[in-house]
Amino acid sequence: MKKADLHHFPRLFRNIANWPEYTFYKGERSKRPLQFRTRPNAISFEVSESLYWVFKELFVEDFYKIQELTSALPAHPVIVDIGANAGFFDILLLSKLKGARIWAYEPLASNCKLIEATMQRNQLLREGLQLFNLAVTGLSVDSIKLYTENTGSNSEIASV
Image (cartoon, rainbow, N blue to C red; front, side, top):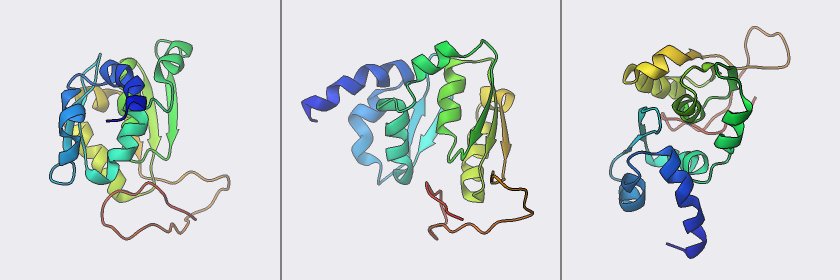
């Protein structure tokens, strides 16, 4: 581990209750999904190898500056998440703001299945997250054609 990476660990400790899974077992991510539980409000979720970098960006590097964001929001905000991917932002936000309501839009069915599976295992997500398997566009259209990698699993990027 590089010394420069150490400054990320306080964020990891604030966001993940079982941080040793990341610290000591991230090298096993090609063999098994990593299992995490958020804090302060516990939400359990899996991170596959293909989602590892998205997880790291949100929970370790704190891309969205979650403490600043949550302190700027009211106690029971309504949030619209466009392009929810695997739902990690929603998981992180609901773990900090138990009373939040999130409308998550995700056009890729494989990503929606991942979110739905996580929702089934977590009451907090079932209460706070409403998932729509839809794309959001600036135009009123009946359908669009999305181009993605043909991996059969989740995808970070889709284009029209």
